[in-house]
Length: 447
Image (cartoon, rainbow, N blue to C red; front, side):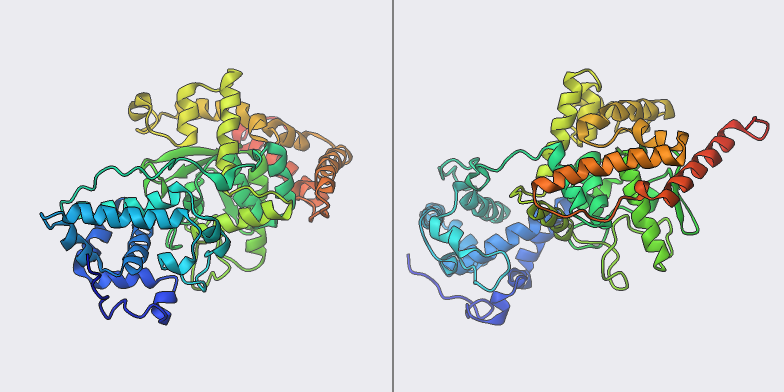
């Protein structure tokens, strides 16, 4: 099968466009590719970008345009089989020792690792290219046969990576800044996926109105209830359903400290203010998903752990499973908090209008799960308001000593003390509790 020459759009492999991280978007100049991309993006924009990028690299590697590949596959005289055989040759190349340029990955693009290419990629890597090619062919009514690429579920790069425990999470918390603590709290204790805090292109994310029990008064942030509700809108949810989550009291304290720091530095907090904001706030409000994951990755690497940021979700799920085993949470509610929709009961209960008493039952179950997730129980933190200042300082000191011991294991120094260890913050917390009690008890209540 003679190889056709590339079109002028992709012919020069050493051009700056082809070395750009966005070089794959040049394919969108083809209206047919644009329609294919748009259809995928309506369901999952991240997948659409990934498929477009892989199709672009594959086409460059085999010296064909997407249109030429589709035309060849539609040829009734063995065209589909020829396309499949060419892909199997490509998949075999990926599994052997090769250079990044062999599958059209220039070295100056971020994320390219020549060492991975030298040792050969796992079958799952080639399978991702197969998925992109199969999707493009399906648009042209060509169904590729099933190809045996090996164990596509194997993940050799994750072999030997330890399970991310609750103690690991707490140590990493101490190795990051105030914004990082908020990211960890939402990821490890609320169970949200990273794109909830900031989507792939940083155009949307969780904002303060999605925490209906959070109050901003001037430069002070308070919570009506803790654990506090987090309402994830359908557009930010992977399952495309409105999700109810809870942020534990310890997470609320991290969020409070972070938001009040932002307010003290001149930010006017309002309902549409992002929960986690970008460093370039004047031009971009949210952090993109990869930056959210980068914050977690940096903290994990700082304590010497090779885990992926997504392992925080594994820790969250494992905590809920342990709580379910001990009878602290029901199976349906566990699946709901994890963010799954396969349970049929969820369709007719949790994913529809929920009565207030049901939301409170969910809050109570989540509160019982806090120790399993690694968050300090609400009662432990709320008890500070009932103590004298000296007693509160003693509890705070004990908490800090516990964290110092964990940090010492990794040879790290202590980061700035958390908000509840500061005497002024303790006095403010006690005042907030008294104010809330006055509202709940009414004007005629005794002090």
